[in-house]
Amino acid sequence: AAEALVRAATARGLALTLPHDVAEDAGRGLSGLVGERRVVLGGSGYVLSHLVAGEAFDRANVENGAAVVAVGIDGRAAGLILLSDPLRHDAGDAIAGFRAEGIGRIVMASGDRTDVAEKAAATLGLDAVSGDLTPEGKVELIRRERDTGTVMMVGDGVNDAPALALANVGVAMGARGSAASSEAANVVLLADDLRRLPLACGIARRSRNIARQSAIAGLLLSGGAMVFAAFGYLSPVQGALLQEVIDVAVILNALRALRG
Image (tube, rainbow, N blue to C red; front, side, top):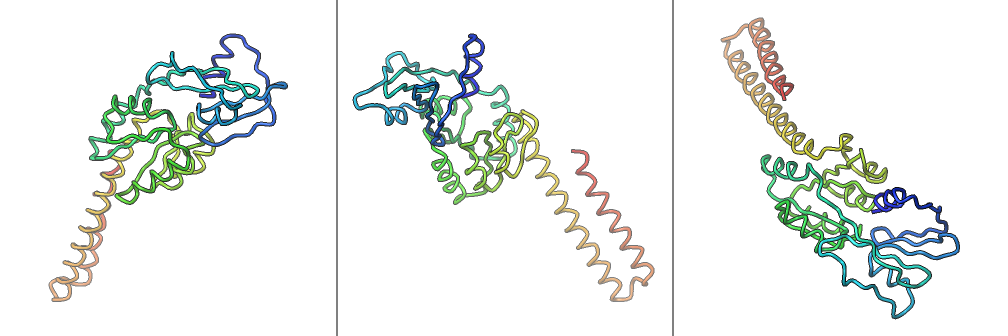
């Protein structure tokens, strides 16, 4: 939201004043002095809690599904800023890729209004959605999901950092995300392309399967050779040569992972 507001102001040629005495309530909003005026931005509930009693926002013209930033100035309700937050162009392909990899549960955890999050989740065909989440709410959601299985979380904002740290695998969108989310994550995706994630999952699973095959085959073949040698069917030289052949075969099988 902050980047969108700055871009809109710059496009209109508006002068940007550096605020001071800024206080942020992570995931809810922030306040500060712009010149001599106290400005509060964030969710409508958060902003109203900083205004004089009786203040209210007119939501009559708020579009269903639009993200809203409330603004209060000097204790009064100044207005609502509506933001269009279209889905990423690669989101649908990424979800389809995860489904193809056998990932059966995909959940959206969003700080946006619940109706906005539900609209996006319905478009993508997700299994569950939670909106109006604070950073603490996202952490609690990850904790509940971990009770039922291994959890990978993808995020890019400061508010995602605690949940990324709690997930079994935290993935930060490093190309456009915050430094805090990158530091908390286990994996930083430098390319701004969500489709890389299901591809990486597929490569990881294939590599794990090949490693398991190689280990099991190597142990079985080596064990069989030891039995034959113990009963005198193989001389020491033959046993040594056979072990080398087994090692080479296992290595060649492992190299299949390089073919992607």
